[in-house]
Length: 274
Image (cartoon, rainbow, N blue to C red; front, side, top):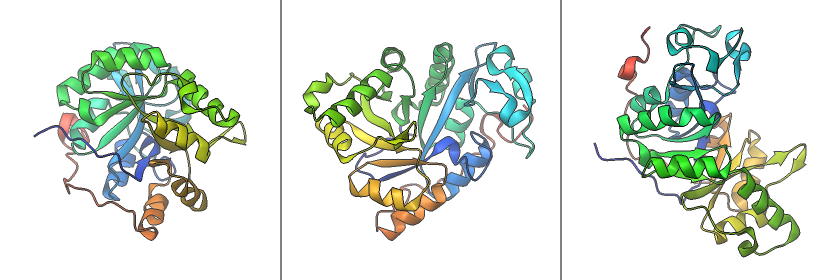
């Protein structure tokens, strides 16, 4: 199977942590539900186990989802994969979801620099570099990781993103933001930060001038989704992919998946106690 790549015209529907308002976040259940809606862009987070295995999980600890007062980094993969949420979902690895959803693209937030070797090994194993975008980390870490995995792209790192937002707020031309990092193709911009609105038409314009496409996060209100799409964002990251799909359908902008591939839920032991 040839590597899957995606056009970037948008607008794109991106399921935040698989659609965290609909199912336990970063679980196979969440990803499969979003995929079933026709969403082919899935956002997730990656941490590392005590024995170097990349694991999809947002928080440093397991308390919120699994009721265990322990850090992901302190437990081996054998221990982690034995855990269950109250709904019965378990932790999965990048290799699991890359195998299970071979025509989906993943935006992956790097929560720990130590996770990079394990993540890149999963990407190589599944030949998925063309459909993985690294995000949610400092610029230098994103660039090092992307350079080590040919074909990977990134979003802007934190410092570059702050510079972009500041330039828009101050009315500085895009060239004042600086050089676009070599592997960056996206700017994942928060809609609001510390209670204040951040994402404006000026941010979108400056990003586009730099050859970057804006992904807005995390937006669950349909009215705001319409507003952001009107100012030209290329994608919306949301906990409610079902509502975003309705918005895009209403606008005549819903893009049906190019492939109707069923999730390969048996891949890499998904769905089994392995």
